[in-house]
Image 1: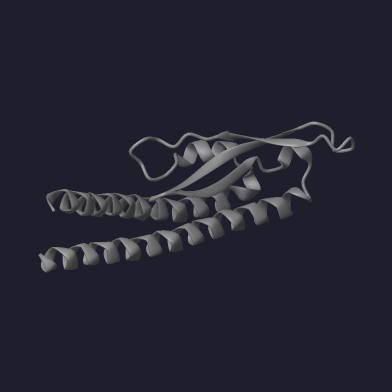
Image 2: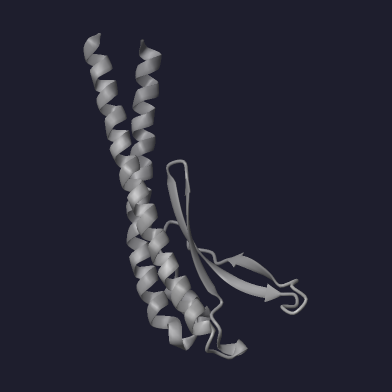
Length: 152
């Protein structure tokens, strides 16, 4: 009987370790997204309206899932009247893939940011892949805990 309790504690410890790693991946993804954003905003200040970046990447953590999505950003309203608002349109990622179609992203990217978008997406693809595996592992471990609880 005590052996089952010990096994459950080991599973809980494993879940904790996986959640710590998922948190580290979220931090890394957020930093990559922020690097792209800071680069684009700095460059946008020196560019004409037609040459400004419309791409924005964002990391989001929900429960055991880490998602990193690219958005197409548009502005509307008057800056002088202080009614300027931003809208974000999600750029769809192919299902069953951990990365975006680079051609689709680069089509929306400005020539001066293409290398940054390519490098950022390459790094984010590895983070998405690892986060997917970790999320599945946490789900399976939670299933073990639930099934052990019903056996008692």
